Image (cartoon, rainbow, N blue to C red):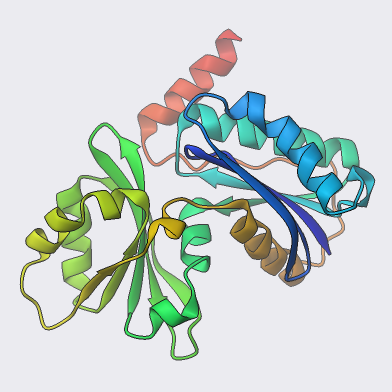
Amino acid sequence: MIVLGIDTATSLVSVAVSDGREVLAASESRSDRRHAEDLTPMVEFVVQRAKLTLSEIEAVAVNVGPGLFTGMRVGISTAQALAQVLGVRLVGIDGLSAMTAAVPRAALVDCDVVVPTIDARRREVAWSLHRVGDDGTTTSVAPPHVGSLADLVLAVRERGQNCCFVGEFARRHAEEIREAVGSQAWSVSFGDESLDFPHARAVTQLALDKLLLDDSDAVAAPSVAALYLRDADADIHWSTRSSA
């Protein structure tokens, strides 16, 4: 199945096309404010680079958050429009799960729990917890949360297991996290820069998993909801729409 993935939820804008488990083409750019300007040319470039046409896309996947308010809106609205025009399935993917899925299995050997993090601004962080199985696969054990760095550390300490933090936020606050966790029988490690942000490559793969589990053929008026972790963000979203 050929899946087009879109991720504009953070400052790393990315697009990818996958055929099954093979990523045919991908592109990315760093931008805090140019999501809308960058996205359409990137979609066109990636589809051409994969030697496909838009008519060959069988599903569209998009990171629905958590992340930047404006970026999330750009990605979701673009993905919904594409899916509707092409008459294909639309799949929304949690960006924290996408970050977890991108962690190489070799990095999970001594890890019991993966903790993906995204800067939520306002001195807060979004995170979730994913248990690592004996076979290297990961399973969500705590849904996405948003809170202070202290809230994040408390959630990790309550697990009492070897943790691997990923995300630019965690790397930037690595020393604070180590100090707050303190001396424990279990270890704390951090992913490298390649795992700083969610990417469309992982979005397409998680979408494929969902599509393979759901054999529904429904394609009418595809839509997905943004993953808002703060009520204020959702209020801004609806007030913005009503005034448009």
